[in-house]
Length: 433
Image (cartoon, rainbow, N blue to C red; front, side, top):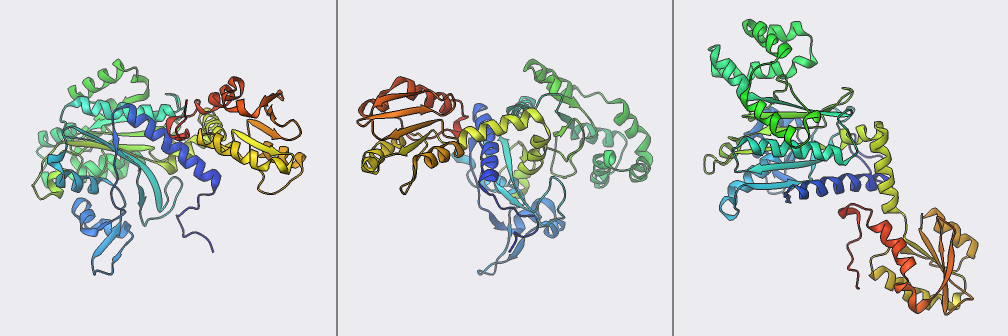
């Protein structure tokens, strides 16, 4: 039996990688004042068709449930967010700064960087119309990428503004009913032959290509870029009016993050969607909003291809997976004493393992090394002292077992490891003084 096409098993190392990614996402989002929330995996199919049209159904895992309801596994979280905000609008002071890490499902063709299930980081700001909210969100996207070890030589965030193009289309007297078709053609222009794009654009091809090739004037984008420059992020971003985001609900600044080499799909994407909450709540609630998502699949691809990012991840995972202490029981009559000490160490938050059944001392030390233990504590002939061995340096010493928890050298070695971890990879057990 194999997993279904496009789905994954998460073996321990895969799970450790996933947890590393989640920890970085959470750590950076919290630094920006975002709080975590989540919604249900299953929603009425109508919630997604209302946002994206009936054509979205072909990409959904949808079915009739036992209550005879048409439901779907979530392909994204934005419609759920709009529903939740509309339902709880008066309960929260604005602006809301919320993030989430949902698992999403899409029934579509598998390809590099895209599976039928994935996790993604979502960050949204609700109830703030100023361009500074756009800057804050783009800065968060940049900082997320930097947290994984990427530099401006590795990644770029390309920024555009749909309002620039709407003003352009109005100036050229194009009927509103044709706007979305032109915007989608601009959005696809980088990925298809220019002749095909020109046929889509019709009479507007020449002026649009001139803007795409030479750039256009946008006071809003100039302000946004200046603000990012003040934050020291200018080298990570680029104004690119070819980024439009094909989805119709975007209403202002939009952006996408890519690897500089252009080998992969977009790492992240999003923008302003000021009208979506009003649309999905049938006009009951109207709030400006903006957000973006970053998927784990393509991000994992880029981490694996970027030496600095890969090394950073491997070191963090090894530090998290490896044991702090392996207790070696050389004398079985000391097992009860060892177990009492093991529990005390675990109560302090240390990662401790030991042989569940009698085992030769040599094999126990071998197990300690295989598990990556920092220290080995041996309960044997030296009792009531225990032998503490630093498995990295080979240094060892005898410590009275009653003083072990207060031994400064032993505890400082363990604190050095624990404190090197990001918050969500650290053990959360209370540490009594």
